[in-house]
Structure formats: C-alpha cells, structure tokens
Image (cartoon, rainbow over all chains, first blue to last red):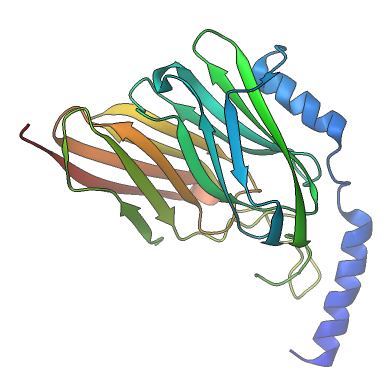
Length: 146
Length: 108
C-alpha cells in the first residue's frame, strides 16, 4: 500500500469516526430483548453462556449457549450485546427433536461489554444469563479485512 | 460459489443425539467498515441458516452482522431414521447455498 493510499484511508477512518452510528446502549439491549420476549421479563437461571472472560480477538470469539432441563422444552436461544453497533447477534430456533439444547458459534465483539443469552421455553417463560467480557482486539476497527 | 463444510457422523443409532457442525466460507461484511477508498463497504451477510431432516426443520438460525466471517454453527439433533439432512444458507445479494448429507441409522 502506498503512503498516499494510507493517508486517504486514514482520512476515511476519521470520517467514519464521525459518521459511524453510536454503539448500542444498555437501554437498546433491553429493548431488543423485550422485542424477542414479547414483553416478558427473562428470569436469570437455567441458561449457561460459555465464553472466555478475556477475548484476544474480537473478530471471532467462540461462544456456546446451553440450557438446563429437557431439550424439547427449549424453543429458541438468542444472543444480545450491549455495545456492538447492533444489539442482536443471532437467534437460534430449536425444535423438539434437538435432543440437546446447546448451540455454538463465533461472534464479533466491538469492545469490552456485557453479553446476554436469552432462551425461550415452550411454556412461554424466558431465562437468561449475562456475562461481562474484556476484549483485547476489537472487531470493526480496521478498514481492511481481518 | 461458496464452500461449505459439514461435520457429522455418517451412521448413528436410533435415538442417539448427534452433533452437527456447519461452516461456510463467507466474508460477512458488516456494512460498518470502510474500504481503501474511504467509502463504506456495503453490507453483505448471511441472514438465515436452516437445517431440515427428511424435510422437517430441526434447526434454524437468524444471523446478524455480529457473527464472524465464515459463519460456524454447531448444534445437536436426535436421530430418528435414515435419510438426508439439508442445510441451506440465505443471505444478502441473493446469496444462497445448499448442502445435503446422508445419515444412516444402524441396527440396535
């Protein structure tokens, strides 16, 4: 990359810093969870959100969410973040034939923040687990692909 | 054309719970990053993933920008009968990819 390109990219980054939508807030996360639950308040418990407390690379953080109890009672599992540009991460739909209520994936984290996993049960109840993580290398800060 | 990898046992006993791991090559461009020209790169992500077991949906996922590039999803299912599992990813810009795997139920 030429110096000229680098400077141009730098200028772009500066503009992005101004134009970038503000990161989501705890209130936005609460609103997103509220949309997922349809107004019901999730109770803490049953759900286990497994993620490293210190994340080296925010571009790909492995996460596993599992729910205690009979797997056929779990209908959906959703993951939310507090300070990513967008609150929703993923919504997984399970079926009575899932056998085991556990899903794993890899997510992006923009900064150190609080994450929530919420599970929807067949009886209409919601259970959640929140974890705080520290992110060393944040996602979405570089212009080039990681 | 995207490349997808599915990891699952080829044979299983009836009633057994098996793990299925699905990985697909995709940049999952968030729409928040800038390119070398200083302009925002358009969003290009996979929005949904569905797994069907002999036509019946057993797992689904709605993905957002916070899912890493080359989305990896692991989940479980209970084996009922021999048949095919169909995996389908759908995304922005008309992206779609389907993989099919066969599962054989062994005796006992």
